[in-house]
Length: 250
Image (cartoon, rainbow, N blue to C red; front, top):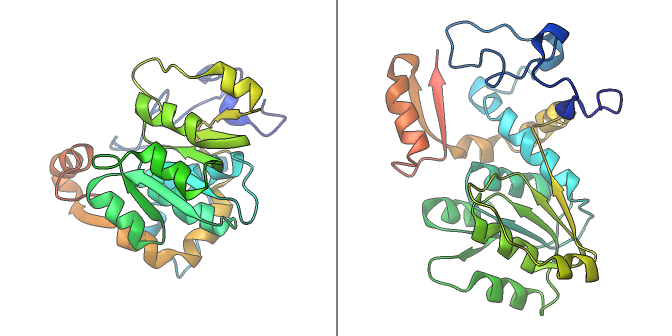
């Protein structure tokens, strides 16, 4: 896997004696007082890219990996299920890679934000999202579906909304098992692609961040000093106060 450039799927994952580490999983992550990072995990940012926007690069590079794995082509219709930070950043990446119409399903403040940055939106709380999504494509479905909702219903809807010969690219991890129609996957040649982390996309994501710095900056809804970590963590994990991205200042 590593020789193929897919080091996120290393066969020696988690074996620290062999030098394989994943920050925050098998090795100390950024919540600790001190961390040590491999040079392979560090990239230089341009002088005119501020640190607040740079702090968004990890999720942005993951979104880029997910969108690229969908096999997106210029002009493709894209459906993004889930309007969290990962879904919002997928809008930026899909647009950068030439997507045609981008539709996002979700709810609340984050869905309004998706509309603000150029996506068509479907609120699952007051609409039949699958029906409306298919109506937008005259029943053909979307060539690329990016699943970011993390819900079983969102994943099922993603499979139902993808076009024949299309791709569902998944980054979310539902808590419960998901039932999908294998018959449809076979007869309509649907590809479902899982995605883990952000192999080989960080430098590309930096270029995207430079071009979209104001959009990324507008996603930063809260900023706290490191001394208020508990408050910042509670607001972010609880999605309180219309939060999207929360920045800590060391």
